[in-house]
Length: 373
Image 1 (tube, rainbow, N blue to C red):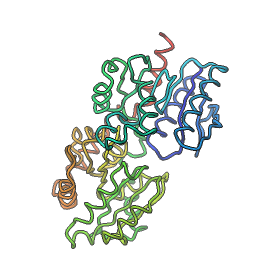
Image 2 (cartoon, rainbow, N blue to C red; image 1 turned 60 degrees about the horizontal axis):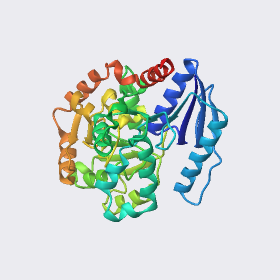
Image 3 (cartoon, helix red, strand yellow; image 1 turned 180 degrees about the horizontal axis):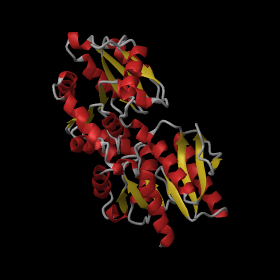
Image 4 (cartoon, helix red, strand yellow; image 1 turned 60 degrees about the vertical axis):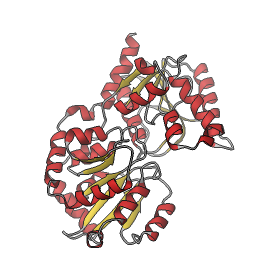
């Protein structure tokens, strides 16, 4: 088939973008022709794909998105494809990959009453309605049961069009024979001795990932324990606000922010704990990546993949509604807990589940069934 893939922006470090690249590459390998439409592209392009940078610009992000929708719709009408597969919510999709949580739910639970009168709300609600509303026929790939519950609650009847796909973890995150050597190399590079504790957080979009919660939790540690801690944040975003917060909390010497990078496995092997107290997260690939690397995880129940942490027994999950004191207590406990070796062993065993690595295959199988239909 000829497939049209739509994504607002591509960069190589986001979970949504990596899923996009995996699925596109699998489709090309199966012989499908792929046209990609995007506003911006950073990094390697899938071999065999035609990438079109859509010339849609506006005075605001909303205007840019509307022009992107109009331009791609008109272009695809002139150059038809068999299926339109979108990685952002917008009209005109045959399949939507739900990398983002339910917008209507977020607007209700995380915004003030005034928000529903803003242009931003009306735009994103309209685009979500185009995918999940009663007049839509769009098939939706979801990542977790949390998404199913949210979308079905706000768009009753859409459940029959929601299809959960498995994770697509990169196998280079798995613990291997040289993981211990890699761990020691990284810790030497960071000047960390055997008494030092490295807390890691990975993810672009620092606000939604709960970096403020993480900093508050680290600052709450008893002084003797806190002195042993280095907290490294890796991701694509503007760090100034959080560097300022760290200074105010007295953590400026212990907190480092690194941009998105390709050597995440080194940090997963070298760290002592992954912290990920996100406000909202459809999946949270890094939770599984840490688990299969043998790195204990502390996260929140609002992350779709927190269910894997519970199933694996590879860390602790803060229940909803979120309580900062609960996170503080769990962080201190996990840094000193005697069952740390159990979390590590459980995670490594969980990593033997082949389904954790099968997203691209499952998505391409789904597309192939569309061809049959």
